[in-house]
Structure formats: C-alpha cells, structure tokens
Amino acid sequence: MEMKPIPPEESLIEYPGEFPIKVMGAMHAEFAQTIVEVVTLHDPTFHAGKMDMRPSSKGTYLSLTVTVWATSREQLDNLYRELSGHPMVKVVL
Image 1: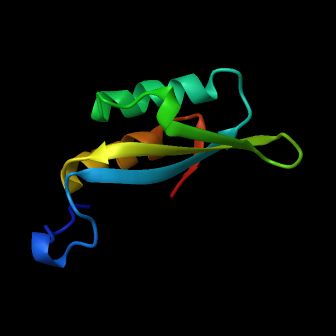
Image 2: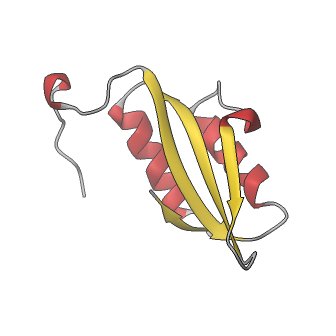
C-alpha cells in the first residue's frame, strides 16, 4: 500500500531531526545488536549509545527505544517496514 506524500508544511515531524522509535521483541541475547544493525542501515550515524533498553517485568520481552536522525519520511517509512518485517520484532511504535 503506497502512502500519499504529505506536504512539508502539513508534516508533524521536522526534518532533519531526532526521532524516537520503540521496538519490542522477545528477550534474546542478540536482539539489541540485531536492531542496532538494522537501524544503522537506515541511519549511518546511529549507535548503541542512542538506544534505551527496558526488560519486561518478567524478563520475557525487551523494549528498545532507538533515537534516529530522521532525514525524510521515506527514510522513516523504510526503517519502519524493515523493523516490522524482522522475525525477532513483535511491535514497532
């Protein structure tokens, strides 16, 4: 499904700028590193220091908040698509 372009004056996001994305998945030793690798493909300036990690209360899931340098809606859409389609990811917000 192709999304219609939003004119810059109607966008709620200012480009370029920082943009947080929450990524949740099952607790796994490689989850955080895998997400860093995926995000870096879309934002070469991203590194693990720009990521907050929170385990669920029972330690079953891990929530990551990654703060990317957003340069365009296309970049964010592509990143969301790749994260959402990754087999380790349960939810992307």
